[in-house]
Image (cartoon, rainbow, N blue to C red; front, side, top):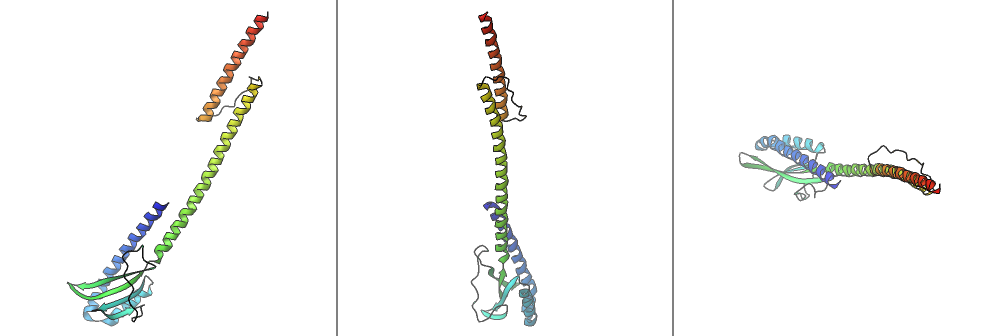
Amino acid sequence: MYNNIKTTEQHLIAQTQNNLSEIKYSMTSTLSGLLIARDYGSIKSIIDELTAKNKISYIVIKKDDKVLLSSGFYEKKDLPNLNNDFETSGNIYNTKHEIDFYGQNYATVYFGLDISFLKSAKQQIIYQSIVISIIGLFVGFILLFVVILWLTKSLDRLTNVAVEISNGNFDVKIDEIKDYNEIALLSHYFSDMISTISEQFETIKKITKNFKR
């Protein structure tokens, strides 16, 4: 179960990394020309639109350590520490992206990517795995109970036959078990043994009867 959860989590993280790469590429292609032209009004509209979609919680654009524009972030606050990986992050993955054009840097974009869905998905996977495991255990218990009940019933039949033989009744018959398992084999051998004992007993009775004559 742990391996399945880990594999699914790694798959989700890989998808998130791809999404992050696409976001960064889109930022470069969208913002580089506007930054060169210093069209801050258009840039502000774009970053406001991005943060409004709830996929990106905030965006801060800095140039030479000065804040040019921001959206969803109080400019007087310090920027959060950047995260190195998704697993140790909280619900927000804090990262940055350099806007470069022909080797020249025009700005650094700091933004927070909402990754709360990763935790929700992981919890959902754990819940589903637990439910599946419980169902599997329950079904396994029922099957085990049925097998034990069948074995007990078969052994009870052999026990009753053994009691009849011990009372001298060699005419008792064992119901044929049409399976290929140890119980069926034991039943077959038991039946052969009864036939052999019965034949030997009949032989002894005849010899004894002739001897009395």
